[in-house]
Image 1 (cartoon, rainbow, N blue to C red):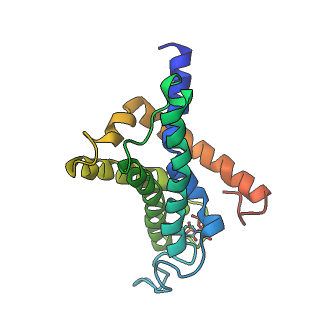
Image 2: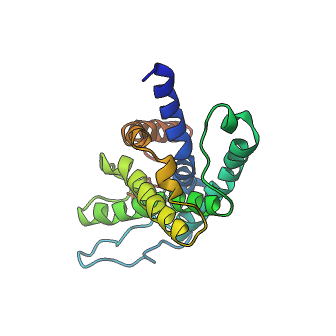
Length: 200
Ligand code: CTP
Ligand code: MG
């Protein structure tokens, strides 16, 4: 494989994950309000999820992520970005919007599931749990993307599972290897900018 191919695999992999990355970054801005667990505690006396997981973050952030994907999808369909440079899109309308939303929703669902286990292991809100803090949202996004792609194919909204068509094995490998480092970098920048209380 030529170096250019490796470079393109990396760029297109990160590109395809942008709906999930964006959705995962947005709750810091759009989150707040009622927590998903509505303040309730588990049998161990600790919060089920904690105040860091809110409904607004879970539902609104993926919506904004999908809205931004509209621009990315537009570039794929209407510019050389797609035709000449080979950047993939998220499918045909309206299936691509559903897939983009599910990638974002899956990211935050994965994050919430991680918080459940974080609380069960006695870790307070905001503590770092490596590598789960870095992987939770990727695994959630990919799981929901895969399932969503299958459902969209079954309903006839797409011809075949579009998730499987674009999230190829080399790209999945890139996503799993590079996202933890990217996540740490973005959170460190968020901390330096005063958006986050902790640098992870
Ligand atoms: N957030 C939110 N709703 C979500 C996810 C995140 O409102 N579903 C907001 C919260 O303000 C949260 C911030 O985004 O504090 C950063 O998210 P994260 O780092 O995942 O949360 P933590 O506060 O570290 O909580 P936890 O220990 O449960 O991960
Ligand atoms: Mg987390």
